[in-house]
Amino acid sequence: MTPQNKVLTISVAAYNVEDFIEECLQSFVIEDIMDQLEVLVIDDGSSDHTVALAKKYEEQYPSTFRIITKQNGGHGSTVNRGMKEATGAFFKTVDGDDWVEKEGLRSLVHYLGHCQTKPDIVVTDYHWVDWHDGKVLRTITTDFDGKQYETLYDFRDIAARVYLNMHAVTFRTELLKDHPFALTEHCFYVDAQYVLNPIPYVQTVVFLENPVYQYRLGMDGQSMNLANMRKNCSHHETVLQSVLRLYQNMDSAETEKKAYLAKAAARLETSQIKIYLSFTPSVQAKQKICDMEQLIKNQYPQVYRSCENKALRLLRKSHYILYGVASRVLRKQNGMSE
Image (tube, rainbow, N blue to C red; front, side, top):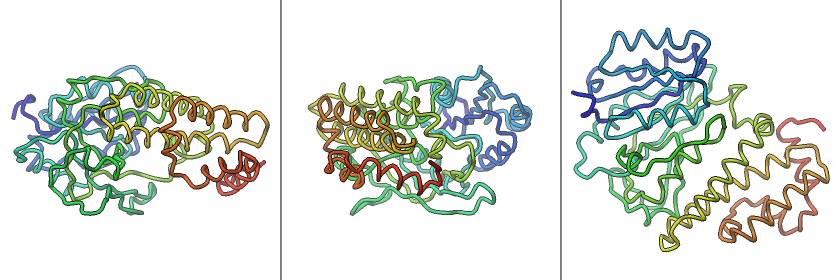
């Protein structure tokens, strides 16, 4: 099978993951589908043995694995390069310290290679796994009433009932190529940009049953750890602002998609306020919350109304009088000292 006829491109974001990269790449070694896979190992300027370990796979399976080395630009830059280089009919991104479940990947590739109508997005379940021993902690599903696997849905019909995240989605590559976008480089939390930027152009979605992605939890350096979110507060603000712009530029006639983006932006705003609450209570921290809330309410009223977080809604109802209490409770829950 030539590169142009590959069914699925998997872009592996690889930065100093020598302890994990072999497990990641080995999970793609599935004899009966390897000729249908293109695995791009995007080395983001690693300084350890990541490239040397990946090189073994490129040498042993040259028709499947390809290493692309670039200067360090952060996770978003690896995805940007992967989307640019992809030749497969579909595209998925996997972090180099995670891996995929082989049976799930086999089922995904089989479906992608045989479906008569190519969906814009294929959604698969995935696992949260303990980073120490790889044991499954939880299966994450994208459920809604009446969901049927392998049924081609009009995205507008289900947009109000789902939220699609990075570990679950596989995009039709042509959709990404026809409507190119770039994730912010040297920035965390760009997974939101990745799953939301294509939404204005998405028409069809299919759900498959077998879990594919295996996502490690509990590692100290993970960006979603609240202490790290506090350190990277400005990164999260950048991503939130980009999603608000995406929402604002969305065609108002596409009401279902507009509402979907509003709800996604509301989720990000809730996370941003959670970051502000994690700082030691102060007049300045409270003012940041009030300023953001006022901006969202005035400029993006649909986003403001789309908030589903009970704690934030209660904070609003109290006119932010409960700010100090909310901050102390959140900090205590996350083991943060005053």
